[in-house]
Length: 527
Image 1 (cartoon, rainbow, N blue to C red):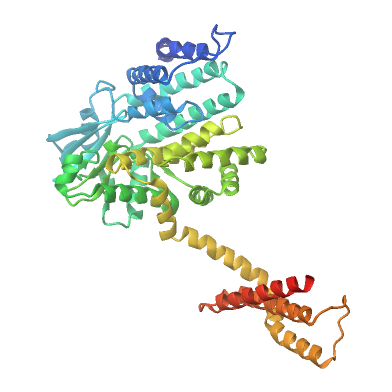
Image 2 (image 1 turned 90 degrees about the vertical axis):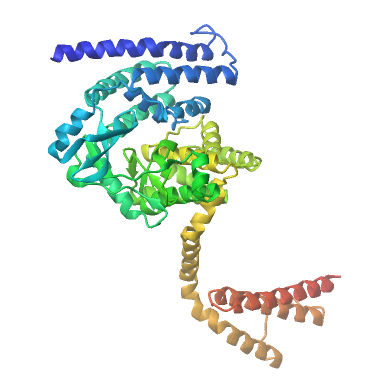
């Protein structure tokens, strides 16, 4: 048995090499015209697009594991150029039907007499599973069934991928070598999680419990029928999110649906910390009640509170175009190395923001592309959590823009941050910090007007002598009084700004008037 597994592994390894080596050689020839020497070749965008299409076809032929490799690479702009990432993203829906065995054997083994096999109807097929509808214990349900024999195939291909990483790494620089190892680790974690339907059921239940919008539906899980290789859930029919004609028949407003999709996923990531990471068109639908229906939670993730807070800060920095906060967040998320030259990164990110501001429509994909291209020369990588968030952003935005070509990701994000108090919360924190700084000084500041009045009275009565340079004109004395009053009013305004009434603003306006009087009088005194 062990010998058979080894033979199977080496056969698969050779099959993969034969399919992928031509692409590796082509990439090397692009870098050096004569493979080991010479200048780089200049290739057109169309040439790279055709090559990316051939690579996509090769991954499709290699089966489910390499379909997942392509999906992961589609969200890794630190590893593959944008034109390849865009082409690999088409692997979401194209699946070979002959991968694995007959799923009905799994249904029979898991449900036994509870299912009426005559009611079993296929609905969809994915790279790892099929979806059916059936009557189970008298109830119409949906069944997600893992392809029989797929797990050993995936485990074998995982070993092949791990064996390929050092070989590919020999032809790339150290930074890309590090990213390749991360991709392999991320891919293994993601695909093994997707094979575990009990984990998917847990994530589905948690995400469903977090949904508090009647316009969004997460099918209810039937835990009593669910196992590691079969997931039973409520059957919720719907029309595909990209079926414009059917959506129009239902009376769905495309722009409103696009906004609903965006805010739903923003809430999952920024508020709940648990999110569905695979919002491609095959996993989104609209039911007869015009509600958004979300399917397939195999690719879902949970964020730690610390990462969640940093993601919020990242969105806020992008919306505000705050370069320094963006650098701090990228370092906190382990995207940038802490030892990076902040001055150089600041210059690069400033250029990125200026470039984005020159575009009529700033998209999430454009932001990610510009950032990764400009940061390519710095030590950076994309951790798994951030990678999945990039995937959610790019895929969901593509769906939103197919619904509404004018969809503005940044505008929706800005509104979401305000509506959910993230920006208000930050302002409140600044005010609290200011209040804490002023706290020890407030008693003295409150007594300041009385003390100033007493001092002015002493000055008028000649009871107080101030040693200073002699004033040549009476106007100078009046100018000094204006300056003191202006300063007092500004101090009072800073305190009264915390009051609900606009008293602080009135004090500030009067203070500006006294300041202008001071500047005029002191100017006349010097002439």
